[in-house]
Image (cartoon, rainbow, N blue to C red; front, side, top):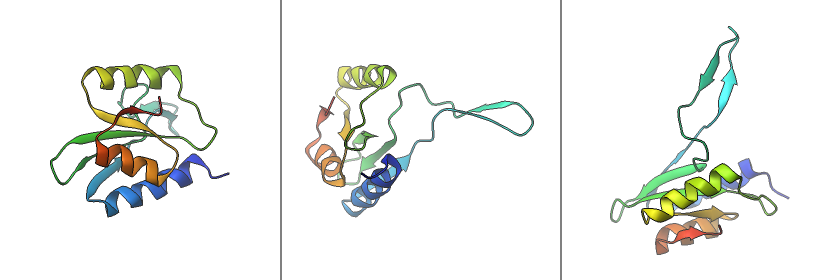
Length: 111
């Protein structure tokens, strides 16, 4: 079974090869050496990847899961917000699913 990190890297390559610009979202908090916490500032539940299609500038969000991963409650809440605004997004477990979500403009695929 592939790790989510490995799947994420394959998805980034696939989306880039399909005329998209894609960014990896680093989320969460990290305790620094000086005992202070660093927070990325992104909202809870923010998907792993986001970007835009070169063809029309449409924004997309991709939550990456391996074959057994399930969305957390905060990820479902973020999905509900994106669905409300008709934003392209979904859960991708393979590069092919991610490309399908983006190319077809799917909303909420896999949730």
